[in-house]
Image 1 (cartoon, one colour):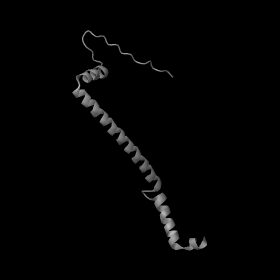
Image 2 (spheres, helix red, strand yellow):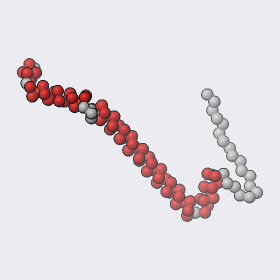
Image 3 (tube, helix red, strand yellow):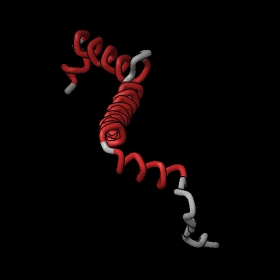
Image 4 (tube, rainbow, N blue to C red):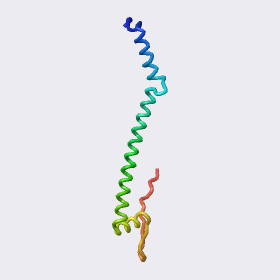
Amino acid sequence: MKPLLKNRYFLVSLGLLTWLIFFDDDDLPKQIHLSMELNDRKEHVQYLKNQIDSLKEDKKLLFEDPRSREKFAREKYLMKRENEDLFIVTPPKEEE
């Protein structure tokens, strides 16, 4: 071990490695944090793409089928026909 500590190339390499891991602007903890943030954003992008696909399917159904248009209007905007009563049932709120 002593000859290794006297080797100046080893010491310089060890110093450089220490500098790069802990003190550099792009140090290891920052890289780990950025990598985790990138993964979170990729998951969010995938979630948004799935939402867009779902909305496109809903749009396609809405514009092609008159029955689905009526169902959408009744469910989303609580519309009703003439001489028709509409009852809205909501679940009770939980109290803590």
